[in-house]
Length: 56
Image 1 (cartoon, rainbow, N blue to C red):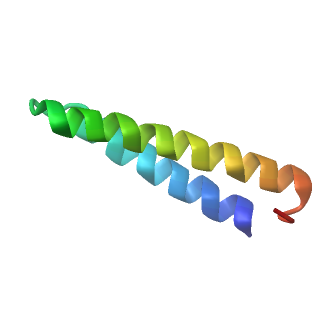
Image 2 (cartoon, rainbow, N blue to C red; image 1 turned 30 degrees about the vertical axis):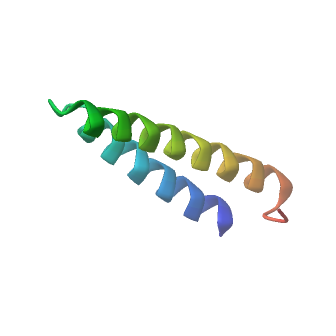
């Protein structure tokens, strides 16, 4: 279940981050970039959890 949860969280954070990066405000764009990276990290964590049987 951890793999699925992390992948969902990762996808949501990436999507929100991508939307924020379309803003004209530089702070919002920077925040969006950070959020997208967080989503990518969550998806990577999900892959690792899946490979290790959620025992992380």
